[in-house]
Amino acid sequence: MYDSIVIGSGIAGSVVARQLAEQGGRKVLVVEKRDHIGGNCYDRTDEYGILVHEYGPHIFHTNMEDVFAWLSRFTEWTLYENGHQVVARVDGELIPVPFNLNTLHMVYEKEEADALEAKLLEAYGEGSRVPVMELRRHPDPQIQAIAQYIYEKIFLRYTMKQWGQTPEEISPEVTGRVPVLISYDNRYFQDKYQGVPKDGFLKLFERMLDHENITVQTGTDAREFLKIQKDGLVWGGQRFTGSVIYTGELDELYDCRYGRLAYRSLRFAFEHFAQDDFQDGHSVVNYTVSEDYTRITEFKHLTRQEHTDGTTIIKEYPFAYTGAEGEIPYYAILNEENQALYQRYKKLAEQTPGLYLLGRLAEYQYYNIDAMAKKALRLADSLLQEA
Ligand code: FAD
Ligand code: UDP
Image (cartoon, rainbow, N blue to C red; front, side):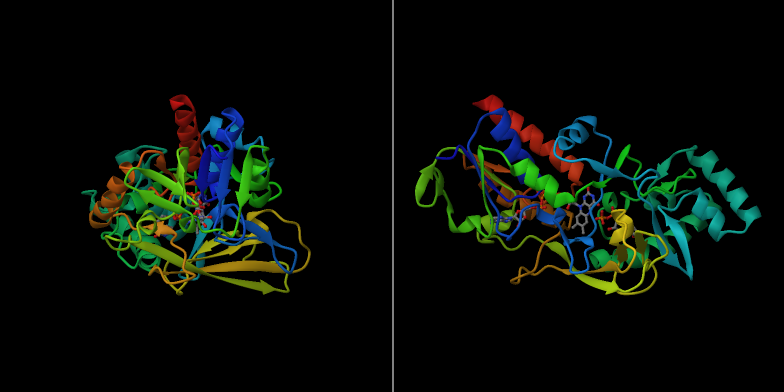
């Protein structure tokens, strides 16, 4: 009855489903174990009428014109005129993150800041993006001193909270996502398009999946229906010869037979205040030297909602995922050992014709929304070409 079964309705699953249904005329079944679509991008209106992101703050940002155009078919955007901006609470002050030349001038006296700025410009050039771990290796002791300040005040404690490990212990790509900017640029991302869907993420997903060739089943764990046999796939007890695109955890597909893949999870604490503003207009404040949570997001500022009374915030408390009931794996922990284990599962999956792995979980990778959408479009196109 179906040509393709897509497991998971996050950005990966929803984009691939739409493209297969629309471009290829494929009949697609989307199966989602949560009681809603949208994966971690899902948002909802809370009891105070404020749109909140259930699984942590999500900002769409991209330089990919094709991805932006494709998603824009399903939504208008609230684009941030001056980009997404983040500050860190350090020693009683709110300083711009990523650390940039504005931050430098806030934390050093003018004369010293001027001298350091000249050094950084000479060493790296205007507009450079330098990972903090690389800055620390610069031979100049003054540059090393700035690097040490940034390391201690911005990265060390936050990374310990987020990953349970020091910046040295985690993959350098991770801290490299927030490089030191040798420019007066306070934006967290340097992408051309930055913002949120005008009517929220859920509406975007609803419109994406609203197609005559797509059937969506929420509240359904695909593992109850999918069986992987030596010679192929079985769905609901019957041989399935179409494609199955799986966007969940790969180890779970094989009952964790080689052991569990390691992830970090998050506990989200929502709080509402009967006041107009909680953090002085800032959408995100990172707590890089204190507190047990990593950051506080104030939704009305993030999504530019006009509310005269009341504001809702979310605090993020990271912890090690154990696989216990109700826990959600958010971040793959990228290191050699974990990737080797992932590869063992991937080898199994490769033996099954018709099974495709896509997404942050199934690929055990760190993807942003735009990169995920791009990957999903590519997979759909290659599946359509194969046929
Ligand atoms: P998911 O969104 O996780 O979707 C996978 C879906 O599959 C889930 O709905 C899950 O329930 C379902 N599923 C799994 N197993 C099964 C099963 N057996 N049966 C049925 N359904 C199943 N990216 C950005 O670009 N900007 C941001 O600001 C940003 N902020 C983030 C903040 C946080 C706290 C986190 C954790 C991530 C953030 N990301 C952000 C990344 C973004 O969430 C991901 O890129 C995106 O969600 C990946 O989409 P996905 O479809 O691969 O996975
Ligand atoms: N990071 C940090 N301090 C900050 C911001 C980021 O130490 O104020 C580090 C931390 O290790 C984090 C990584 O940089 O996990 C990547 O940050 P990013 O904001 O990209 O993480 P995301 O929330 O998107 O996963």
